[in-house]
Length: 102
Image 1 (cartoon, rainbow, N blue to C red):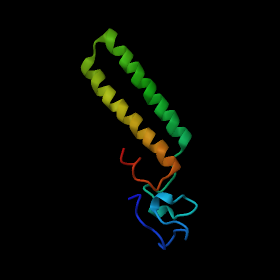
Image 2 (image 1 turned 90 degrees about the vertical axis):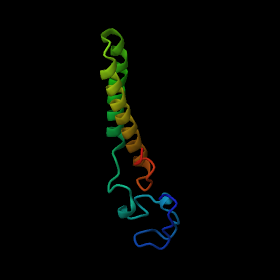
Image 3 (image 1 turned 90 degrees about the horizontal axis):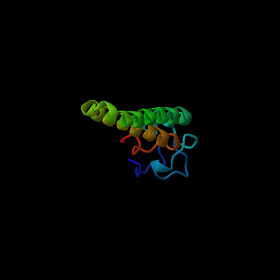
């Protein structure tokens, strides 16, 4: 989708050829993956919180021997971290679909 040619499309600046070259100032947001620009600082904070919980969960597995619970929590917290990292990438270019597909 990022290699989509959008020259001459309505709402696109005349100097834009590919959708990957769009920015919110040059292209209409209807061509974006989402309709807003994600807040970078909030997503950094949530990524930090979930990463901290992930580290704490891995540390607590040894004394309490909760292997199954920790495996599930590890997978869930890892997915949350990947999702918030993708949202941080989308802050810089909401017209790319790659961070959304993470």
